[in-house]
Every structure is written in C-alpha cells, then in structure tokens.
Amino acid sequence: MIEIRRVFTHVEHIHHEFGPRAETPLVRGAIGAVLTNPFAGRYEPDILPMMALLDPVGVDMAHKLHAAMDVPLEQIATYGKGAIVGADGELEHGALWHVPGGYAMRELLGWKGSRVAYTAGTAEEKTGQPGNALSIVPSTKKVGPPGAALDVPLTNINASYVRGQFDAIEVRVPGAPAADEIVFILAMSTGYRVHARVGGLLAENISKWDGLR
Image (cartoon, rainbow, N blue to C red; front, side, top):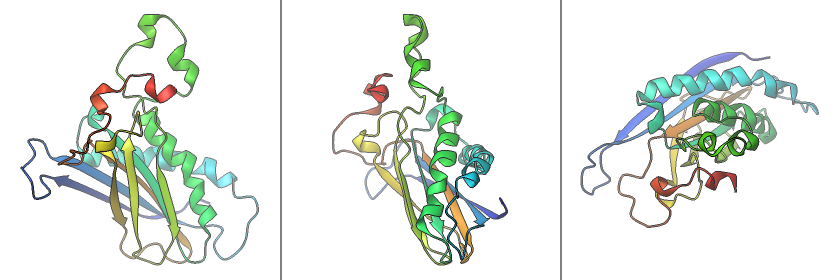
C-alpha cells in the first residue's frame, strides 16, 4: 500500500528580511514524500489501516529532515506538517498524516508519550530540559494539481502561543502530486522570525509544564 516515488527536501537559511543581518541565520526546512494514493479514483470507507503503515514513513522523514538541516537537535524550535492530495483523491486522505507525521517529529524531539511521563515521579525527575515537543503540531492540507504549493504552518514545539515563532514555509514538489498521488510534508525551523519584534511570550520563558496545562 505504501509506494514512495520521490522524496524532496528543501532547506533555507534566512540572514535578514531587509533589516539588520542576524548573528545566526534562521534555518527552515521541509521534506515532502510523494506516495501513490491507494484510494485514488474511488471512495473507500475504511482508510484507517493506511495510517499505521505511514508510521515508519514519518519517522524516516523526520530523521532525514533533521539531517538535511544540519543543526543540533536542541536547536529545533518549531514544527508543522501538511499534505497535498492529487486530484483523484479526497481531502480526508491527507488527514491520514496527522498522527504519523506529528508523532514522528515529536518523538524525534523527545516526546515521552504521555502526560503521566512528565508528571509522575520525584521533583528531580520532573525537571530537565523543556524541549520535549509538548505542543500540538500545526497542520494544513489541500487537494491540488502537480506543482501545487502549500504553506505549512510552524509553531513552537512546547507552547504554540510563542508569537515571535509563528511562521510558515511554502512547500512545492515540482511535478507532484499526480492525480493518483499524495505529497506528505514535515517542516521544522530553528526558531524566531529573523526580525521578530511584536511582543508576546518568549520561548526562553516557557515552563516545562506550560504545554501540559
């Protein structure tokens, strides 16, 4: 059921947006896997079996994207996901990516799998670095033709209301998806928009427990 035709990776380094040059560029990356859509051209009431089959695809893509970005894992600050479904498919086919894509990145970044894992134990066991991907992974999806672009949202991995890290990355795989294909996308970045200055919560001030409330 899982047949991958192409994998497209995009990484950019943003040094400025017509303001002062950043000391450290913002690194944004996205990866898109082009898969045959086994449900193209027909209505299939039970599509859930494909979701579990996509789990290893998500894990592999998350690791490949991190490698392509070439930054330490602790520098990954935002994430997002998306899907572009070819014309013979339906929007719901893109929704199959919500769990495999989201949890692949969360686990890469240290998600422990449950609320109990963060709240149980001694005070010492509850402390530690906050980068555990506590926040929901934002998502978008559409049905589109070959070469269609998708703006994939990016928000902080631990608190989606870090205003200076609200962002999006445009993803387009040339020649995909064909009518009987789906492009599944993961995206990550190293943090703040390069000239962020509109106030709000800073990532540095996030409590480890903000994402659990």
